[in-house]
Length: 295
Image (tube, rainbow, N blue to C red; front, side, top):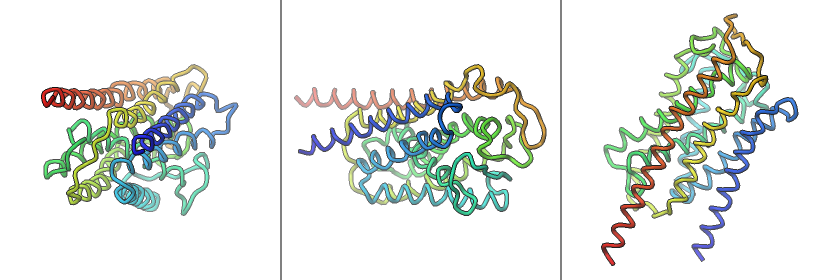
């Protein structure tokens, strides 16, 4: 019975990944599909994926804690920055990302959940916390690595969303294709805070982690990988104007922005996803070897 329930949940996870992948493909056709639909397909499926995937590992209470930490810190950081410029910098949101609450797009905050959770899973796999409780060392290194993995996602797409799509506009532009470097420092701080809060929660929960199959873990790695691949698909002639202008009036070649995004997506996000994938395989091989010895 439990096996059937697990299989049904995995089927839902894989279906969500397919929908997410479709959203990344459809982003190449903004002239045929409303941009808000494309944004929703890139935000909602990963968020639902994270809720289901996380509940299977941490339980409903644990995933509720992760969601509260992630979305709570994200909303506070974004709202604070909109009003004071800290921690990301000075910017304003346009109407591209849809409905807002107190100047903050709902879909923007929700975007933290999907990739934020998958970044955590990649860090868990890379550091070997897949089948063990977070210890004192994990309290330090897990939030740091997860924050770095999530920041790689932001570096890969920030200039596209801000300078090309103009979903948000940086008041004074910035040296990274119209984006200030301080934005990425703010990302590190924000991500570190909510990952640290969740690491502390998991550290205090002394119950042993559930033993879950490899396809469960690799689904989260694929979700992160699909995100990186989606950035690469944007490198298509004619999708954007040849030149882009940031709020400071500086002109940026679109090809340079897309090339930078592709390089970060492949060398950064791709490498991290492959490392996590390989680490999950190593753990599985060790478990298989132990079971053979016991026989």
